[in-house]
Amino acid sequence: MAKTKVITSENVKLHYGDFEALHGINLDFAEHEITALIGPSGCGKSTYLRCLNRMNDLIPTARVEGDIRLRGQDIYAPSQDVVQLRKSVGMVFQQPNPFPFSIYENVVYGLRLAGVKDRAVLDEAVETSLQQAAIWDEVKDKLHESALSLSGGQQQRVVIGRVLAVKPEVILMDEPTSALDPISSSQIENMLLALRHDYTIILVTHNMHQASRISDKTAFFLQGRLVEAAPTKQIFLNPAEKETEDYITGRFG
Ligand SMILES: Nc1ncnc2c1ncn2[C@@H]1O[C@H](COP(=O)(O)OP(=O)(O)OP(=O)(O)O)[C@@H](O)[C@H]1O
Image 1 (cartoon, rainbow, N blue to C red):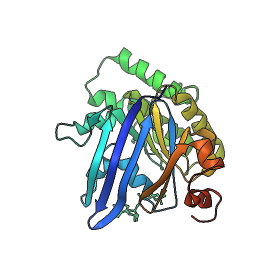
Image 2: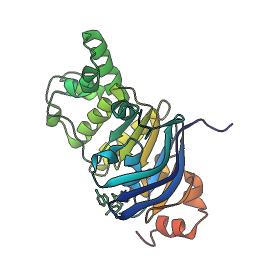
Image 3: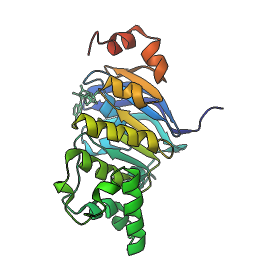
């Protein structure tokens, strides 16, 4: 049976001023799958990812065309609440970006903004989110210390906990492990495999091993085009397009 699609995107084009960075992308994301977006530097992976929760709205020159839907709702409709969208479609960046607050306050940040005051509810959210982010045991005795005192890998997991606390459906990740050491990266990869049971994850990565280890589906971008998207095994073992084969075998990029 076909899996339910959480995000659909049709003919997505993006211009930065006069420059067309995306040339009409058609790509869908199924529930509870990890999709890896791969391709050489500058091919538009991050630009496309940012279209999915309207982060490009923050770039004055960026103009998006096409149709992007979250569970059938047009996310670019005038009636779309963008704050709500970014809760449903959370984002994790390459550099861990904890706020200069305690670990606890980082995790409850979105809940406090939403007006949640009940201490028991906040405590519960902190424990659950940090457990899901695979860092609870390491920080449970120092929740009120600054998140900035943690290592890069720990900070990234706290940031993921902060995203999880507002209960997103989709998590966008833009090279979330590329600034981290191999052990921290593998902790995050294992966490993503566990999170996949509850969330839909879209991951930009330059790491082919990471894409092949953890993703269900891989989409290969080249110069603003989507060359192909298919089950990860197929992309790595038997890609339909020569450009894909050349890239994954390291012939360019
Ligand atoms: N804010 C911006 N203003 C103008 N052009 C931009 C902007 N951001 C990206 N671009 C251009 O859009 C194209 C796609 O960039 P993007 O960052 O999406 O690629 P990428 O595949 O994510 O690259 P990388 O793997 O290096 O992060 C590039 O030509 C880039 O120079």
